Amino acid sequence: MKFSSQKLIAVLLATATLSACVPLVPLLVGGGFVGGAMVATDRRTSGTQLEDEGIEMRAGSRIRNNLGERVHVNVNSYNRQVLLTGEVPSAQDKQLVEQIVSKVENVRAIVNELNVLGNATFSQRSSDTIVTGRVKAGLIDAKDLIASAFKVVTERGTTYLMGRVTQREADRATDITRGMDGVRKVVRVLEIISEDELANMLPQPVPADAKK
Image 1 (cartoon, rainbow, N blue to C red):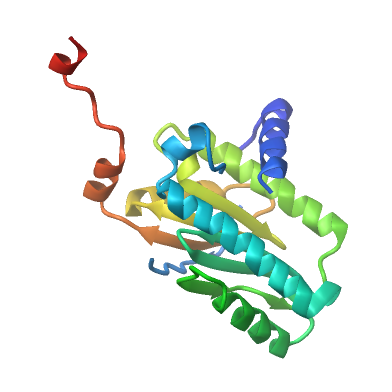
Image 2: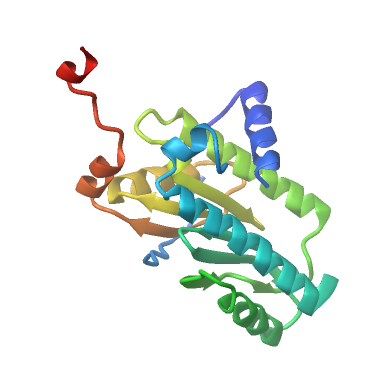
């Protein structure tokens, strides 16, 4: 799937502001911006969005305070479920990071995808940013998906999909992601909801009588 350079650059800028066959690893574990238009389309409550931002900031700060620069850990929270990606020097450090994050207020679940490896190079991280941009562009282009329902994270060519979505949306987004250049593997960290639950989240049409 190909995109114009202008569209990809626009998506990459949005990613920066927010801070081929591919094997699929289905990891279904239960369970934007805060303010402006994203709140209206986000499937979390505004309170939960604020909690997620707080979790990411507090967890990142505590990891740095305890482990310093010897680890490279990315913390992403969606609906109070935390995804940990990046690199740590040992299995003990991997568990220590999880323990630190588990003590952060409001965290309800942790998916620990940290690798015991040397820190990724600048080139690798730049490549991951480009891949994330491609995936976001693909989700935006899909007319049968609401792209803002997904949070996309890429680490060393593995792309993680987060969000509260239906099974149909999960499968469709997975297919799109698998077809993107640079994606080695797709891991789904999704909360699956029913079509009825989704219908209740969407804005309801205003009755004709109410418009008079």
